[in-house]
Image 1 (cartoon, rainbow, N blue to C red):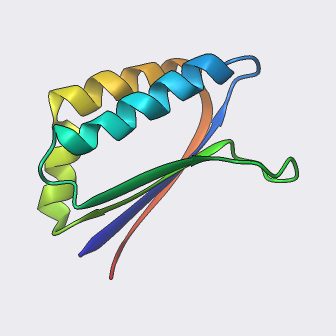
Image 2 (tube, one colour; image 1 turned 90 degrees about the vertical axis):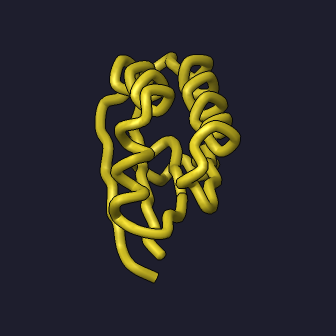
Image 3 (spheres, rainbow, N blue to C red; image 1 turned 90 degrees about the horizontal axis):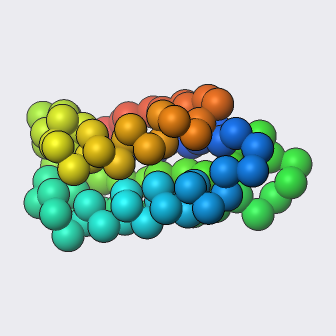
Length: 94
């Protein structure tokens, strides 16, 4: 099993688009069968550098790549790219 974690820092005053992005990301659970688990969250601690997080799980790295290249994921990612300042990710085996 592969755990895929992503954190984003967004531009100022993009809270509504950030929520739209996260809602779109969460809808992917019902569209992309390779997603075994997914949750997102918005940071509540003003001392933290990043604004939102994705925690997801996939059976294999190939399944993760299928998810990343799925047309619906690409569409959601385009919104994110338009409002983010930074992105950090890590993938590891569990």
